[in-house]
View 1 (cartoon, rainbow, N blue to C red):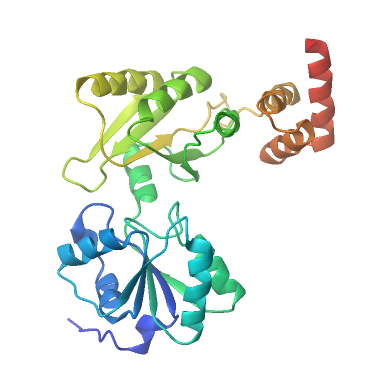
View 2 (tube, rainbow, N blue to C red; view 1 turned 60 degrees about the vertical axis):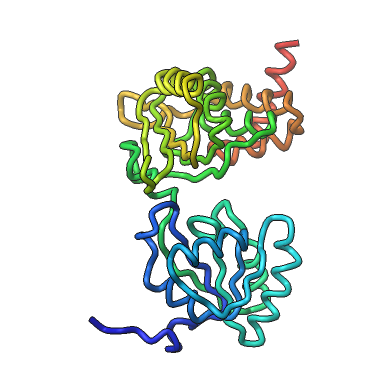
Length: 301
């Protein structure tokens, strides 16, 4: 077996490296991550306490300075880190679990590095999104990742409007305290027979994947919440919209799209903005859709 020297130039061919950390099972730690930890000069962490606990669990020591990089300081801290990288400092970026910049801090730092023409690369590893997708049993050839389910009613309404006619499998994150309400709402709006999967505690001792129709999952999770509560990190995977007999997703009619536009407008979005957004999402003419929405609003009144 070849022993790789962490001092070799290839390990730090870019001064900023985003590295995935385990999402549960420590055995998923890559050798490259271990080498980066040992040779980094600065480690930018979503939570420095979590990173210290990880280092202790892995039995790894580092001379690097640990600094925080979270949603509240990422804008200002990114400027500082880019300047350090420009001066030649080796900077490792990690989140609490998974890949930085994917629903975790890091995106602004990457953008700042690109803008400053500072090289940045990634050391891949564990990620909840492809792991949950692979275990869901749902179509995987085309999928979209939507991050956390929005909490604001208007944003959630727009998400549900899109999901009603989404051509691809959708992966979402949700809090264990909100998953029952979310699945119940999805069943009501999208139809109880829409297939889905709920993955919990991925790669950990109590990993669990519930699969079934939305109505079934809503009932099962509600009972689980009543009995013992629901804990752990959760990923929701939702099947694409119902297929026609020809095997294709039924296209959205202009009339139906106009109804979506009016729903978004009722939630506070400007009618013209909503028409343009829905038209882009479904390959329609924005002006035609705007006129149809106006006409539908007039007929309702």
